[in-house]
Image (cartoon, rainbow, N blue to C red; front, side, top):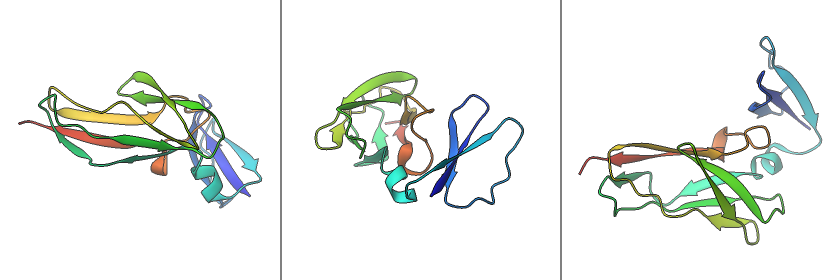
Length: 129
């Protein structure tokens, strides 16, 4: 059994197998009959490299793994929603490139369904050439 803690806007703040978490004003707690590992595996991002050159050519490849059985899941890439098609629980985002230095943050598009905690989010740094 695990516990899902939600923010006041119903987005998932965190999840835990520990009931000791003290809720802040407006937060809610749900109980799910699953394991931490199974819940975390609903949305897991990985990347082949976390730093790229800001030359619009160097690229990072981001993979999404999910045990949900869905055929696609929406991902937020710096505020732009990309639909990732899943085959056997795995899919790849379009290659991540950057023309200018900065950070590229990738999270679930639906934070009420998938947590950004743990492997649910990642940041790629685009460095000045």
